[in-house]
Length: 331
Image (cartoon, rainbow, N blue to C red):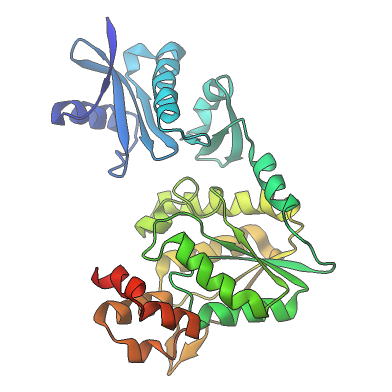
């Protein structure tokens, strides 16, 4: 008799690893939940969650029947409901796409090596259209920036200003997921304060569809691998296929990346997919050093606030020297 179990014991997780390896899949150390269908003590099928992403789905070769995969999905969906997670995603190889299309999922993006699904309701179009309806659009050209601002630096403002001078309106999508040193609420508050003097720049949340653990988990893991490059392509394709038409965006801008290989690869992915709709400009430097958020965090961790002054706007500096700001690094 088949029984569903939460896989927490070492021997259970070892069976999960072996089953995944037999299908050419890797075990994701960042998974937040793993379960499996067992026949006595033998693992028959498995599936995992990484926050709102369904992953690591596999069935043993002698039980290749859609029924087992559907049962795994049923248990994982129940788990998502328990956690009150309404929007979720799923990745699979394109050859397995039909079973998920028949069980409440829709394709967001499909590449030759991977298919990305979301649950049907609410759809990406509905979510983005709702966000668009809250916007006040100006006539003329429109560009977009996607930023993390961890924290906001003069380098970010340099790029924002360059974009705002070139286009009638700029939509600035701030990475919404709280996986950075500076929480989203703080990053948004600092940026919102600075944008008061920039009336043609509109601040918007990135949503779960841009640089999140769903579309681009390796952004937070800082891996540069085939897997991360596929995720970069998915992330940029979503922006091109959904964000650009729904928000009437003509161009996406970004700063050049001489320091971080992963971000440099992401920029190259944007060049390849967006073509003439992507514009890269040189980063701001100070004393021959690129002004970066990582450098500011490095100085803040060392308590070197004097060196931070020239790299950030007053609103960021004031926060960094405050009790709340110092607690992020010395709490």
